[in-house]
Image: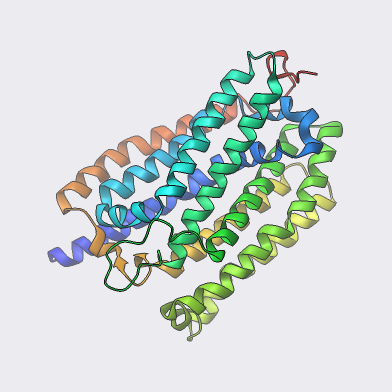
Length: 341
């Protein structure tokens, strides 16, 4: 095997790892942020205590996966990191500010006399973090709107209708995931309220997903050629069909008052969407401008990183599994999380 082939194979491995960690983060922290977003709704204010209690044992570990995603992008694909970051400075700032705000609010609310103020801070921080992630995702799909002759996008390149629509999709998608999680963690009247909430939210991420599916091939000609040629057409059609089926099962699970179905089928929608995005973008990290092979760090660096990842990833997975197993079951409105009436 020559050096070029080896670089190509290592680049694919890191692309798959990046996708795996990104999915792990979205699944685990997505419902976490979704619960925070739902806490802003007036109808849920009386249930904020039990909502925050449901996250109390897991939310710190959930965010660790995003750190790994950033580390991989910086370490394995430094050229892509350097081109992407200037284009999303503002969303990245909003993301970090949102994380800091919700983190402080979560800890302070437990001991504060005026819990309402910290509940608002927790909800707004969650909303900012989700909105920022949507803006960054929209910018990646759009290809960073880099002007001809420029190596980097402008500071406000992320501010366009498409990225705003994607941001709405991420916010409502996380909220749907959060409602599914709360259905599993509650019972009685609160659970019935979260069934109704999930039912109301369900159409919005589906509409945004349809808009992105239509928009992407219109903007990127290589996507149009890839999707609408045979036999690719049949292969790429599988993922949206899975998403449509998952939406149908999600609707049925809400109708049947299933406790695990809403979360599981929302998860399938997210996974099929990410699989479709990865299959569409590959081998690009920045559509039409930068391929994974061109962005890869020196071979000795990425091989050393691979050894580190192989050692630590099983530990992270086992830790997360153990934590969820230990703290499984219904959430209760403990005194420390009780609402300040």
